[in-house]
Length: 348
Image (cartoon, rainbow, N blue to C red):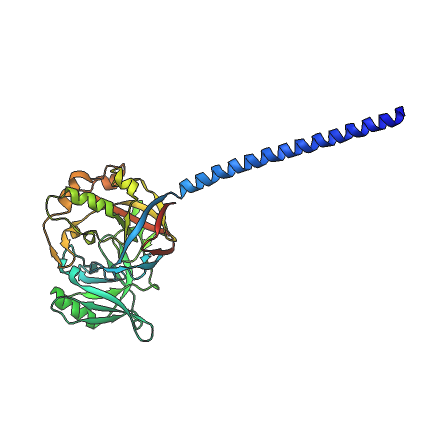
């Protein structure tokens, strides 16, 4: 019996040791699980913070012909060059042996030239163009092969081809000068922003545009416009004066806090499936004084008011030399995608 008792004691002791090991295993596993859950929550919160919603897209615009009237759209593909069909056509005239692009700076009445994109019966795209006191004209996107031509805005050059005599004569009659219409197709080399003689240092390799001045996408906010209109002493201005591609509306919480320009601190953000990098604040020029419906210059606003509160105050010496205020963001497309009205904007 003593031997039986000893075997029983050893068996019970073994069971207790086994039970203790299981308890330790369960406790250890539970602790590891709790740690993993806490770690997962922390990582999720960090990711969620990085995906903080900044704004919502309310309006989208393209400008098929540089310096001519806008077209409001609801969605667009966005390549490295910017929105599809945005500033793919430009007017130019010969000066000192170069073909120099025309803009509203010299010819405000270009704003009254209204291009419309329309599809033909065979699915091709064409421009239907109207202007005051002029017959309409149609310019096909698909052109017969012609020599590649280089045009310049004085700061950066780009490849394109002549659209033809009909368009050239039409615009020459409208403006009262000899000029031609040129088209940059997807097959032509884009304008690389690092080649810009003034703002090139703000760009990175492979950042490009069509015939837009200094960036592929221009972004402004409704909140900034509301703040401007609360300050201007003359007539309030519409958003089209700033010729943006993307118009955003900030969250109510931001607007309620009186923060009208949080975009000043943005460096990159995602809109829809497109990722944008902020190259610089947009220094505004005299084109903002042109009535975009009538094609006439009206006074000196918004420039006068912007000078009172929106002068560049950063460290970049290139922009410190600017004599006009800033409004909006010049952005480069670093991740191609699509942007649609209603899309949320997230910090990248």
